[in-house]
Image 1 (cartoon, each protein chain N blue to C red):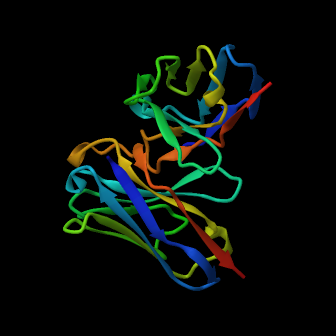
Image 2: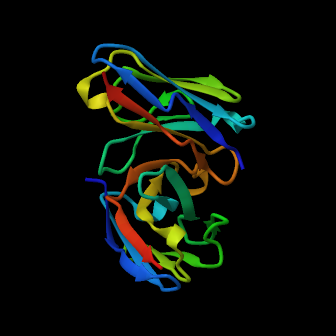
Length: 123
Length: 108
């Protein structure tokens, strides 16, 4: 079964740091660009960050650039998001997601999603 | 970045009826790279349509997508009880990928 299982998240104070993880199984992890997408409480979806299949290229939304770092460990089939200098507006459910395309044919479409993990930043 | 505006905000229909959801872009979506997702409360989104009109794996054929340029539509031909949910469009033709604010499909 194709699956993304997330861990991490929780309550953190403004200015603090947190690390999210995403464990992949049931597919060839090294073939896919991976993403983080977030959803503030009661709000819509926002793309946060992407990392290409080999980990060569990383992309960030303007709202998180310089504060968040995406990484992957292809030997362990895992994806991470290191978040620092957290702000109240970063409060959201964070989803890891697989790109629908493979290798260089990634599309920034999301066909497999993790279960989501809530990050709450308190002031 | 491209702004996507979905309408209506809420659509109230009965099972068996036809639903038509709209997504309008602030500028042309390159290559009609437009997706639709369904999201139920407490769940992750589910990919329904990509490339404006291609159904994702396992999606029933009552779901169809159409449109080009700046105007796109998701149609559900005959609503089933499990279709009542939030629906989001997303464009991936220009960076950054952006989402619409969503349409809530409610049972009437």
